[in-house]
Amino acid sequence: AQSVAQPEDQVNVAEGNPLTVKCTYSVSGNPYLFWYVQYPNRGLQFLLKYITGDNLVKGSYGFEAEFNKSQTSFHLKKPSALVSDSALYFCAVRDTRDSNYQLIWGAGTKLIIKP
Amino acid sequence: DSGVTQTPKHLITATGQRVTLRCSPRSGDLSVYWYQQSLDQGLQFLIQYYNGEERAKGNILERFSAQQFPDLHSELNLSSLELGDSALYFCASSEAGLFYNEQFFGPGTRLTVL
Image (cartoon, rainbow over all chains, first blue to last red; front, side, top):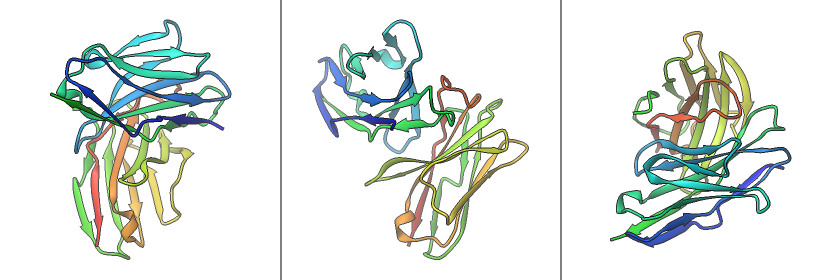
């Protein structure tokens, strides 16, 4: 069965430090992977996606994510965190063998950046 | 601004009532998705429509129904409302129902059932 795991409910990082938000997945086919961010009282915003090609994907607001097939992971990273990065982050995956194209969502990770 | 609009922004109603939430997708997007977000259950996929046809169903209760109209806007109908239905309801749209398309989310409708 398809699944996505975000093992940390919350990640705390000091401003200026690098940040990582973890995501692992399980699919039967090939994965198409996505990261979204949700600021307080707002809808989700697309950050980046991995479809194929280079394992390092760059997205909005200076974020990037690395696809690791052997570890079935797609961790979100940023070299230097800003207080404004504080938000809820969701990882999602589509399984290319799922004819319904359904997007499977992680539970979300709350990122808190402290000044 | 994602280009996806949702109305109303807030809705307060009583148990047992019926409400309709409305969503207009981005111009040109054929797929519409509905999600429920509550504090204790995270983001739950409810249902997807593609060009007027139901494409996929998630954890949607039988009391809930949706449709997508010829102009591609969509409505989510929630009936016999219970306290536990209080949540944020998001609509999202994408260009087509393809694997690699990202979804664009509306601002959500906050439903409070008293």
